[in-house]
Amino acid sequence: MSDRKELLEQYYDPSVANSTEFYFSKAQEALAAWRSLNIEELLLNRLVQLDYSDFKDLAETDPTVKPIRRASFY
View 1 (cartoon, helix red, strand yellow):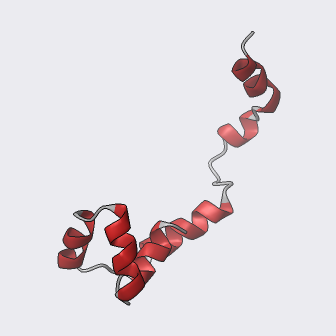
View 2: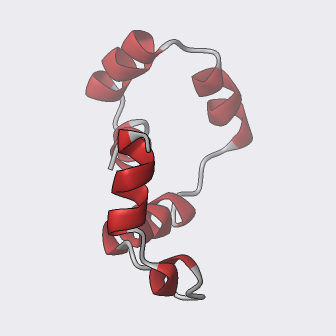
């Protein structure tokens, strides 16, 4: 048996996998932060064209981009 399969069988919890609840509170918080953002379409179009380092640089100087970066990399 492969190591991965053994680990999966050892740690797999069907009650979590089959649950309708969302167990990962940190992810819930990040999703809520992202959903609360109101990004203008023009800004969003500009941001999606940037690579990560340009986005990071812009977030350090532009106060409208800082909360977007914070929510994107919660």
